[in-house]
Image 1 (cartoon, rainbow, N blue to C red):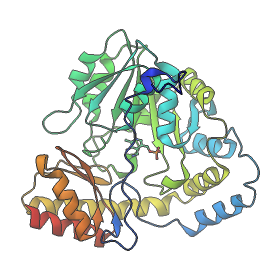
Image 2 (image 1 turned 180 degrees about the vertical axis):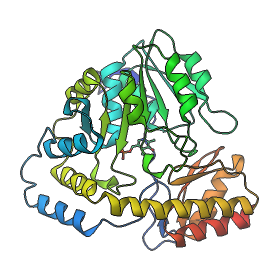
Image 3 (image 1 turned 120 degrees about the vertical axis):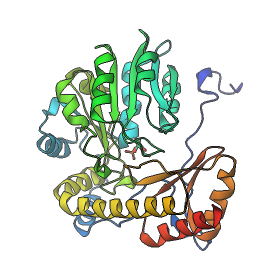
Image 4 (image 1 turned 90 degrees about the vertical axis):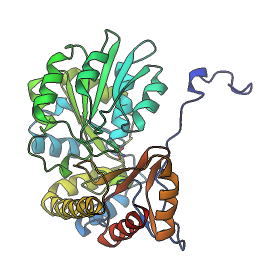
Length: 356
Ligand code: PMP
């Protein structure tokens, strides 16, 4: 650690920083951003109106308790207020969860590859990451994850669907896994892409939370609801966990604009879920086209697809950019490509055709 900052925690050095999805360069060849799993639809007029109205008082702090939003969520999911916590995006809530549960000497178990925030927020807390490789089919290996749990394990993340592979764990295997997890170990079901699931065998995490005190569900308004830029996510968890999350929240971490937009989005859910339906159709079209071109693509239940490219990954991403779409490369592994506008998906499919 630098001499001029003698009091910074030494272990913060070496923590990887987030790699934000590269923007589509203005005026450059890459007009479409398919690198951050965003929703390509612009805000609904009614949602925009609620944000505009809230903007009139942004000289004031927001409602720290997110009262209106908490009430809406409580009604929508049929859970008591004491079982809810909101945060600055679901990544903010995940960071609070680790902060509340794990520190030096503790372990956090998750599949790998998975959401890039898990290693970062674990390391920030001083806890140790235990990464369990995905199966060769890019699915969570829940048996191996259960085997990896020790008496030092505080948290297990199950990302369902998994980012970046889009794969899911189904009810029977998830129930079997949960039966093996000790009662004092918290299982976090990260369901950021829940609304894009069409596989009827995938359980709703909220149902599992109702049956099991050590299950916590993370959801976000960033994907299906299209509010990525406003930063609002939430957790549904039993009383002690939800209370700890409310305690560790950054004060005023969810702006009034975000709160109002989230409330308006819940009220416009039918329309927003209609858009999700269109994106799911596009997903099917993209996956079918890739398979017809001869690619092996895992079954995605999210708003993105995963293409294994190994050593060709970086070149492929550069070719996409040249053609007009920005994708997310994981060097040496593959690319994750958001399902976006049909025109953007078509550009991507032209590159895959040429590359195969
Ligand atoms: N979980 C997963 C699996 C994600 O992919 C993301 C976003 N990339 C998040 C959580 C966080 O989303 P947000 O903080 O915008 O709610």
